[in-house]
Length: 123
Image 1 (cartoon, one colour):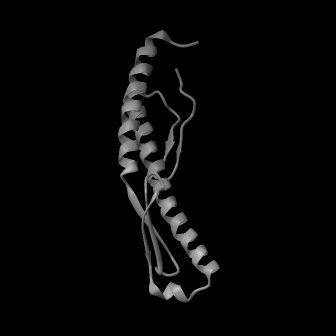
Image 2: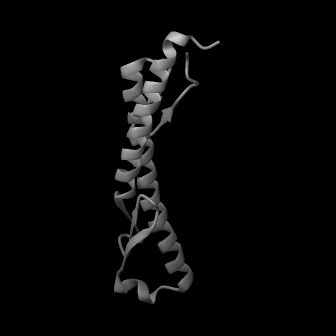
Image 3: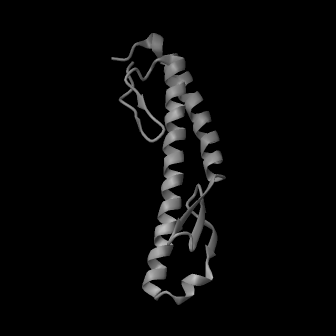
């Protein structure tokens, strides 16, 4: 059963969270991270949408077999993507923590820069 006295608090928190999420989404879309492989002979930059924004290849890679080049490209992309994922999880966790500190609606929230576990809303 929902406690009606907390209902307006829930709606207020939801609105704040929606605004914070919209801001975070814009910031994350404009974030750029780089990954590298092969000791830096392959570097790939991606934005928050996981689009590749830049690729830098050392001339040393031209002597490598195609399979090695493909593996290095995948590795550099994966590393850049993981950095974006970490930033995303951290930023979303920060939003939940802020809403919780203001409202206390998530009393069992666990947050670190790499992980945010949000339990069901307690009303």
